[in-house]
Image (cartoon, rainbow, N blue to C red; front, side):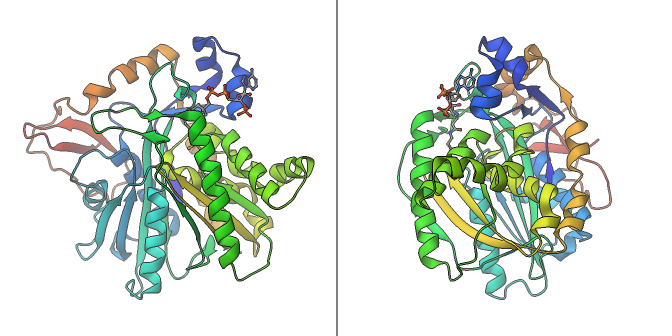
Length: 397
Ligand SMILES: CC(C)(COP(=O)(O)OP(=O)(O)OC[C@H]1O[C@@H](n2cnc3c(N)ncnc32)[C@H](O)[C@@H]1OP(=O)(O)O)[C@@H](O)C(=O)NCCC(=O)NCCS
């Protein structure tokens, strides 16, 4: 696994001061300390490419070993051309590779991951790996209740028959779906609309259903020593764990203790990045492994994915003894430390420019190659703008 975030972030204490609310509402009430903010040359394609490039590098794998590439996103850059195709070009993936994009709000990455497991189980891999990339920019209107729960980033994962981090339990997942209007983004909007309190209720209802179904299907009584939840903001994962403890018949006091031990380590990295929609659950997993892989070796953990609309899935896996050495290569601290803190007026200016960012003419001629292969380059791509035929142009700085 590896992740990528934009260069800039907003500190939630700064945002609280600008919006006239106590900082504790955001930092404790929502459990968010910082949120990543994308600049005009950073988009879901550049974030996905950077996360995937780092993932291949950390695993010591070459693009030629990828037979399936699925990008989960709810921040598509085109109604037709998938981000997976841009990624195919930018990474230099082989032509004999199935590439596509999945959308189901924050569940899209999980849809890709579970699809990849089925692909392996069906024997389609023939020694190759699947590359799953979750990439999103979470935007709500400036000044809205959702504003402190924004974020931006990508998580890339390699799925293979010989995992090094977590061995998932194929075929044993608890699903829950229903048709609800808790969160939506009409085609003409860049920022999402949400019925915030209702979305919290839908998430908890979906967890209840998915967990019950997983318990019915699970063939093992071995306990889950940790659980990673979808993290739109840290408090949501806390509410989710409380609900699960309640379902397991635990007291409130025991649930609080359990949260500190079983969930808190997974929220440390997400609290510094904010909501990255499809990647949020996997950033929580990365955070958990980064902090505790050694002590968790051989232990069973749970994962809960939720996507508004809605679809949810609860599943489990086992942390492998090789996880600690592998996750140490994900450069978590340096990636976060290398970011730049944005003053609120700078962030607001970026948001004002959101609408026009996709339509600005590229500073490069339209003859510039779309998707110059990055395979041998150790550099991130940038979105340079569109050419005269409205094609997106990506360059390597
Ligand atoms: C999450 C969301 C609904 C919160 O909206 P809000 O109007 O700010 O909500 P609240 O007023 O309930 O405040 C949030 C929390 O901060 C707490 N709080 C308020 N002021 C506080 C303060 N000064 N210090 C500490 N906590 C404080 C509230 O008690 C509440 O905690 P609780 O949920 O445990 O009751 C909103 O940010 C949103 O719509 N986000 C996007 C949708 C989303 O992420 N949904 C999740 C499911 S997918």
